[in-house]
Structure formats: C-alpha cells, structure tokens
Length: 412
Image (cartoon, rainbow, N blue to C red; front, side, top):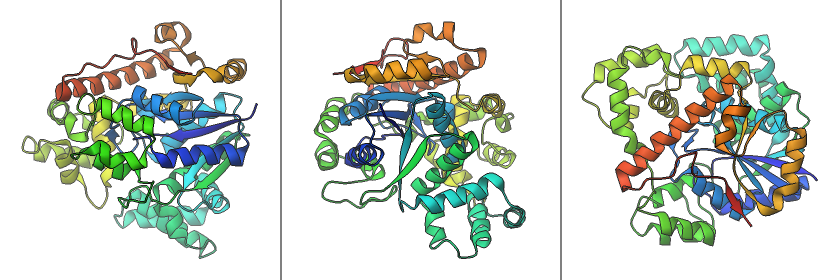
C-alpha cells in the first residue's frame, strides 16, 4: 500500500481541493490519502468558517481516506511552525511514502534550493538578512531580499517563488523534510487556475478566499454552488445561519476582555512582540473589534497576518513558553483522528503497526496514552474548540458538541 499525505485547511472545501486530491493520487501512485487538517482555527490567524467536523465530512466525501487534526497552537503559527509540525506528524506515522502540496509555480527543484539555504544559512545570506532587518522592514520581506542577493539571478523569477502563500508553505515543507531526514518524497502540484487570495471566479473554480466572502453574503449557497461539490453545497445549505459562517469579529468581545485583563503580560503570548504591547495599551479601551485591532496594530514591521496570529494566540491562551516546550518535542506529540472512510481499515492497521505516536481515536482514552506534554497540548486544543463553540452559540444560538462527545466521523 502506497500512502500520500496532504497538509490542508479546507476553509472551505472546494473543487480545487478535489483537483489536488486526484492529482496527488495520480502523480504519487497512492492507494490512500492521509489529510492533516487544521482544526477550528487556521494559519492566517482566523477561525475556520465552519467547524472541524463539518470540514472533515466534506474532505472524506471529496476523496480523503483519513483526516487527522493539526492542533490549534500549530495550525495558527507561522508558516515554519505550521509546516514543521504537520510534516513531522506525517513522518512520525512511519508509513507515509509521499506528500503532495499545491504551489503557484510547481517549481519544486528551485524551491528545494531555497529551502537548503534557509536551513543552513550561509554567511553571505546571514549578513544580508541582518542588514535588511536593521532597515526596519518586516522579517518576511528582509528574508526575501537576502535570498534575492544570495542567488544573484540564478533562479528565474525568484520574487514570484517567494511571494506566493502556497510557495512559501511549500518551501517550509521541504525544509522540514530535510531537517527530519525523512524518506517521504515531496511532490508539488501547480495550483489550479486561481491564486490563494484571488477573488477572480472561473467557470468551476474559486479560491477559498472568494468562497468565504460569498458565504457571508445574501444567496450564499447559490453563489458557492458552481465552485464546490454537491455534498459541500448541501452541507452549507443545511448549516448556514445555524453554525456558519464564523468570522473573526465574532470573537471581538472575548478578545477585548483578554486585552484588558492581560495588558501588562501581553509579551508572554506567542508572537506578541513587546512593541505591540505598548500600542495595545495606548489604544485601550477605544478599539473594540478584532479587525479594528489588527488595522490599528498593523505597521511596516508587523504584517497583517502576524498581528492576527498574535491576537489569536492571546485569545486562545497560547504562550511563548508553551510553544518552546512543544518545540523540544518537534511539536508532534500525538495523532488525533477526526474521521476516516470505512475502506481505510488497511491504512489504519498500517499506521498502528508503524507509528511512533499515540493515536487518539477516542478522547476518553487520551489521559491514559499521552505524555504530560501531550496532555497539555490536547487540553489547549480542547480549550480552543470550546472558545469556537462559545462564539457559535453567541452568534447563532447553536450549541455544537464538544470534543469529547462529537465522536469520530465515519463515512462509508
């Protein structure tokens, strides 16, 4: 049995993801697809538009064989931590042959060259990086500028390679594979028709960004139907106004409470730089919504997504010290199952026989099989889900099942 891993958010699941799955099976020769999926909060520093169990159902219907959750502290982190934790999860399963990721360019050999420079940091690159950081630009910009100087034009259109979200993540996946000395073979699939942030619509394809926008508008189901599977369209039709769409500003009241009560300890939270602490204190209590806070704190030094993630880590009580603890274990402390297809029994057996990680298939058993750090990570993830559930209840009056009663999604 040949197994391929996909690292995803499915926020929401759409036709481009169907294309990705089909291409992954074809180019890798995979018999089974394992999906590592963000839970209720995603990497751009925002809540998922619909909860993790609904997205698991959509993924399984679309062709996934098994869906494992990426815990909230990692799914909301930088591209480096997001990629390292997810790749290590696939690696520690001990039976994954390949991983396949989307890319705006598909130029995997050149991405691998960049990944090696970032992993080994030659002196020339280090010196230029420090110089650009001193000019006051944010870290991603400084890093891109230092790479441009290092490669001296030997990689064509390097700026495009470093500027696109899927390319950036792809480079981090390749870095993680090299660092882990993993035998997993990477494949890059050229992103289909539309860019990550694009709101341009094609006959049958729209980006997740465009779809999330549609889902907040009138006649949302009619608008998204051409771009998602019939099953996904039906799920959103059934759940719209009941538990979706969930938006960033739905967490504004809780964020405001956290900012007011933690204003003297903000630097303890992951990604919350000391400079941001002073800007927060200077703007309390006049700013109120989540998005307003991001706009106020956004500067040349700190990107929009960096601010969003910092605020989200405060909201979810994710501290620098917590992430340092998890980093000591290479982030990967367990594999938590969200759902699987009935046909995946052989796959599950292979994971059981080869995995170096405890598999959480029943939440009630977690306390028996996890280490102390593993339990801490799980408890933080459960708390994040409870915050998401609270926002859903406040907005729609719908009480979602908690992580202990929701159960694993099983699809025929």
